[in-house]
Length: 327
Image 1 (tube, rainbow, N blue to C red):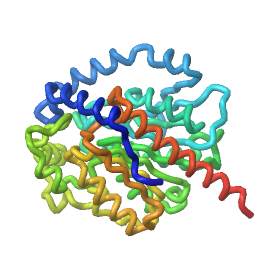
Image 2 (cartoon, rainbow, N blue to C red; image 1 turned 180 degrees about the horizontal axis):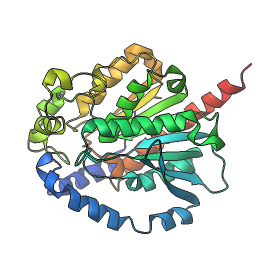
Image 3 (spheres, rainbow, N blue to C red; image 1 turned 120 degrees about the vertical axis):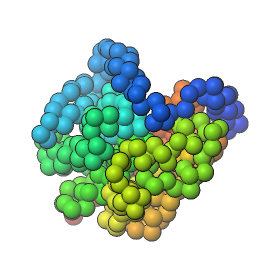
């Protein structure tokens, strides 16, 4: 696929939305004391989420698996399921839950004929970041090891956004210790993740005019999330997936915003991924004039980005099914 192109109306809509973002607080660790309040408000806003999904023809089930890890399973009612997606939500590791991706996952189910397992991992308010990584790995083990026998043999994809992009990449790297399980993953879609906990150049250079994220605090925030570690230790994989061994990873689609402080994380990760498994197997989309978090914006650009991801997934699902039919 070629680079995405956006018409003048789409870019103008984005610019107008950015003016609104410029008047809003930027996310940073100085707001960490408010994270519990934000989490409570998020849960209140999600009351009735199951009814909304049911109206869209999607069944939701919350379950504990793999020794207590919570997952949210979404599947179409009566429709075909051609693949399973392991979804890992964002939220800066300190807020969010699996339900916050319901709308995105419902759209993906309808566009791609998939079932979705969204990991409701513990948050870094009470748990070291290793615990979050362990929850995601445990959920992946459960799913890939036959946790949903009704979907046995179907291709599996991993999708992650922001902090979830980091956790998704870390999970893929850790699965390399179980080649049979890693080999079941047919692809990964990663939206503007964090791949170096010491800060890539765009993170270190981020200024106060950064949208969504608090640019000047970003390096300090990464250190606050990993207390007791030196920068040399923070740079090690899988905590910093950018420095991991990417040979054997699945094909991938990576998105980054041109003005996102995490831009260099994705650009460098895509380059290393391509070097490891081949240029044609890794697609990078650098979105013009775009800040962090775009797929949650009520904009045409967000819809076009997710549509590109859906097209990529459908192509990979078709390829996986075709390969399974080959003699």
